Amino acid sequence: MISKWQDFFIDRVKSTPFVPLTRRDMEYCVTLEAHTSLEKYIHFYCHEGAGCFWTVISMIFNPKTIVEFGTANGATTNLLAKLNPSAIIYSIDHIGWAGTADSATGFLAKANENVNLIMENSREFECKDVGLCFIDADHSKESVLSDSRRAWKNRNVKGDWCIIWDDYDWESVKEAVDQFVSEVKWELQFTGKSPIIGTKAMDEFNNLVKERRTT
Image 1 (cartoon, rainbow, N blue to C red):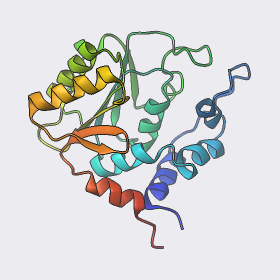
Image 2: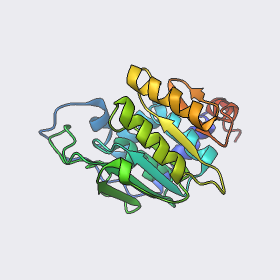
Image 3: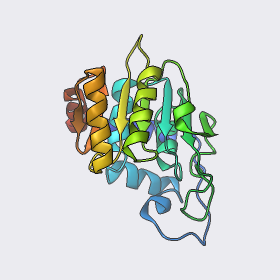
């Protein structure tokens, strides 16, 4: 019997077009290998659990507008696009090269029609009613603070929203996040290593991770 989130994942991924990565000269990487076929993608992100976090977050918040600060190769962007096919996704980066598989920024996500890859400084990006913002760009304290404040201004104040940070174990990121949540007076919650603030309690996250499909 599979978990409820795995059922959700498989349903969403199979309902969206899958464009396999076909480059043969790419340096081997488990994440890139997962993009070479639909079967490998489902195995890695679903059965091995690599996509659990973003699947459950998508189930809880059902975001209609998603912003990602820091695109890199676009693996997370692509995953969010498949899990939220009715959402509009903006992924912001100012570096034109992913540094992976010798390809351009966001190459894993560019085939998704609901993804907008934007090359500009995240500090300047304004967007209304953001339901999910993932901060994973420049990890300096100054930049993380700036991105956090921008995410706060962009959030969906009339509905559900969340802001999530990557690499909280970096001292600069931790200092910035802790300062920011103190400024906005919002409780920082954790799902594993990932810090999050938002309109939903993470008890629901933990319950969904454990919940099994009943039929």
